[in-house]
Image (cartoon, rainbow, N blue to C red; front, top):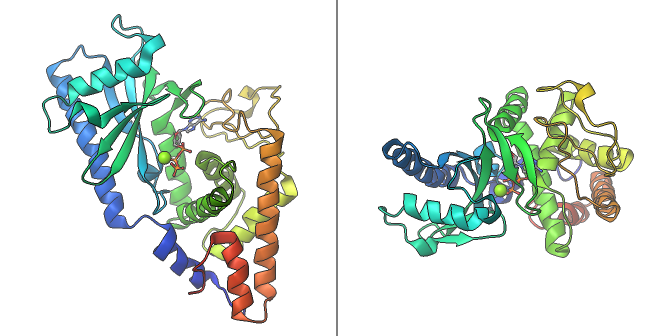
Amino acid sequence: MPFIEHSDIVEFAENRVNLKSEYVTAYRDQVGYLTKRLASYIDENPSFDLVKMLHSGSVAKGTALSTVSDMDVAVYVKRGSSHLDEKNLIPWLADQLKLVYSHTEMKPEQFKEQDHSVRVHFKGSDLDVDVAPVLYEGDPNDRGFLVEKYTGERVLTSIPMHLDFIRRRKAKQKNHYTQVVRIVKWWVSQRRAENENFKFKSFMIELLLAKMVDDGLDCSNYLTALETFFTHLVKKQLLTPIIFTDFYSADKLPTRDNNSIKIYDPVNPENNVAKGYSEATRKQILEAATDALEALLFAKRATTKGVATDCWSKILGSGVGG
Ligand SMILES: Nc1ncnc2c1ncn2[C@@H]1O[C@H](COP(=O)(O)OP(=O)(O)OP(=O)(O)O)[C@@H](O)[C@H]1O
Ligand SMILES: [Mg+2]
């Protein structure tokens, strides 16, 4: 038997990786507070330009890490409203939010304008909620133009359809799909701690693993799931387009796309989620995956526990195997 087994990864995930369930609940309640307040404001002011809020990030999906410090919320904004200033969207949004929460204990200084969102800070929990605008024209599936967090680019997509997409994979592999997502995200966080330029977006990881689950990956053994994931990266080099036909047929995908990584939004075939990932970033991810796979295979053959835990510390940091 190898010194590090599935049960060791389970224990590590529970102790280090996962956001504890009581925090998941408390954090969701925090977003719920914002959402409910907005809904009652809209009830009183039906012509208001904000339509609703949807919790869109990892805490909503069940893929948050213990280290999460911010949550993502999409706020739907009526496109075409005469009050809306699309060129100054973020300052405008900050003003609207201050108005909505002006009769609560929340203070205007808790609302900070960022490049592409408004950050709401909660002092009690020290949590930040990033409120990103979605320009919305009344689509029944809540499609709208999301302002991308880091690039500011506007992408047509649907948060509820994403949540539904993830929910379908969660249903296929209860608890295990999200757990493997969280462990891989933890691996990414370790790489980023070593090199702040390392990037591998969480949504890309969720989509890659969703594809693997659709293709038969069994996530219930975390050791073998990780080995399969890293092997897949090393073998396929992130050069195989990742496509899903949940919400559109494959013939809708673009025939030309110059990005080397192609991971298409399940909701919008025009939206490559890996857009902007350079060739250098792809190679950096593959190098890290190769190191992880080597360490994992070496750990399997290790003849002492010390060697095995050493190998795992290169993948997930210290603490695997006690
Ligand atoms: N490029 C994109 N195109 C379409 N939707 C996106 C894109 N990036 C993010 N999203 C939406 O935002 C949600 C949040 O994804 P993201 O990868 O930013 O962070 P996260 O899941 O909250 O993880 P983390 O723990 O890293 O914060 C996704 O589930 C998706 O609905
Ligand atoms: Mg997030």
